[in-house]
Image 1 (cartoon, rainbow, N blue to C red):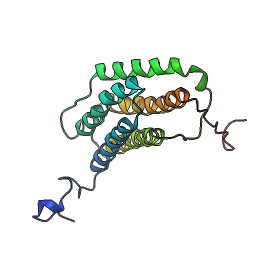
Image 2 (cartoon, one colour; image 1 turned 90 degrees about the horizontal axis):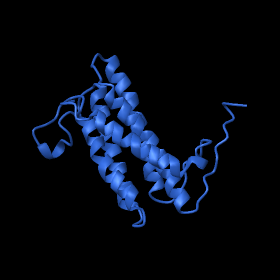
Image 3 (tube, rainbow, N blue to C red; image 1 turned 60 degrees about the vertical axis):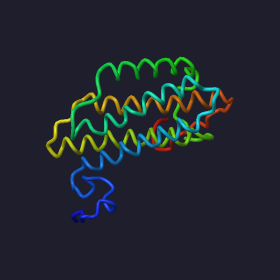
Length: 175
């Protein structure tokens, strides 16, 4: 496939590439959209979470362009996000004992979608590296942090709303 001359019929300049890099860019674009949706759906009584999502959303687009273009994620970005993750860990320390079913009212589903998209981005970076492209470790580290951050935010929001998670007990692992 090749793009035609009509730019209205081309959503992204690299959309017809066959490498995993384009898929990575599409997934990180999706990640950014899920973060934006979660941000937009936050209730006004959670300005701390809104401020953090406001800061983390552009990081998703910085991750997006950091393989094809110039590296735009820094150690200071990781340090900030890890500090925020630990801050929220403290708030839900009592809820971090088990895996839970991903449930809750908005923006909980959007945060779980963002969590999943961050995982997909890491997996695609593994594939891109297999294709011979060097991946700076700061990028998968950031996406792993984002994944954990979004999960913890779901616990925080549910706790603040007085909603208990439903633990998931696996029949495949443990016991």
